[in-house]
Image (cartoon, rainbow, N blue to C red; front, side, top):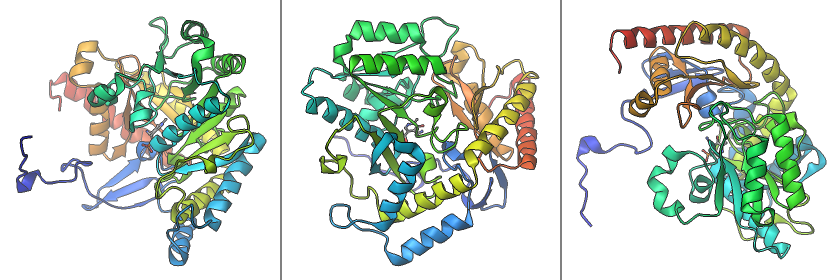
Length: 438
Ligand code: PMP
């Protein structure tokens, strides 16, 4: 093995580029860097900070819990914060779910969901069910299993060697070029070609995120997938890491279609970005007569009291301030205004999405997209001009800029967001015309 010697200037945190501004503090929809520059958070970070930054109720809950007890291990002690959080989650999810499995991230929650699916079929003696159907494009997390399930070629690139043996994940793609996501015909064909008796689960995001760029699974397609799962004995798993807890204008994204997934994967908005936590909601059919707590999985920090107390405060705030309803209302207005703005730019399509998970599609030739994706350039320019938005998409069809501010965003802040976005798009257009592409 050749040894690698890092020079001093090469040594930096591998997770963050040395050219990034250093964030100093944040409040509501605004973040400030150490130079005092202000950024409007138009994408809630990576669509995580659902209730905005620095909410006093959450900070108080965090410091209160930290002063009492920060960590206990889940097999040694129960934690009141975890018990209360579980009651809160199950209370808002209705009677359809009976247990919550905690993790530290959305990716780990996807892993937990895959394990629960396998446990379910093994318990039923149905060991031939090994195929997981997932969409192209989709993103379910960075860990090996979650990434194997993801229709996101860019993020899979470096782990190809790990995934190539994973014939168990069957991607389902749209048929024609006019649709971004697979429709009823493609799902039916996938069930038929894989063989219904071999399918362990369907995993899908109700609204696409990093890969799908806010493409919405049409309600009738979601309902048909549920029927196909029920008829074949496969489990339906909704990845609601991005869409959960009010983001789409309902508590969960799947509620719009009136379906009942067997497992719901959550993360991000569960703690609104205040601490790392993820969770799977487990439905009645998954482990009849057993508890997921009896199965051998979990992580050292899963369900730690500090994250649980934080998430509890975030969810209570979300519920008490009726942020799902607010996201539905604000999202409708923002979408209309984005559509009006997008008409002024030949390189933008009609906005898509649901609630406050919106995207403006970015149109670009294949070759240019491969060289320098325009959505990324737009997001870099936006940040320079004091606006945070998020690049999404894995192809020219899914490429988009996600606009997904905190659900608490006020009217005057929406005005400001649109102003900064318009300024960004004008700048990108002018720079492109002058051949000054960064
Ligand atoms: N699923 C979806 C739908 C996501 O959007 C993400 C994160 N972007 C994940 C899973 C992975 O979550 P995490 O980054 O917390 O591991």
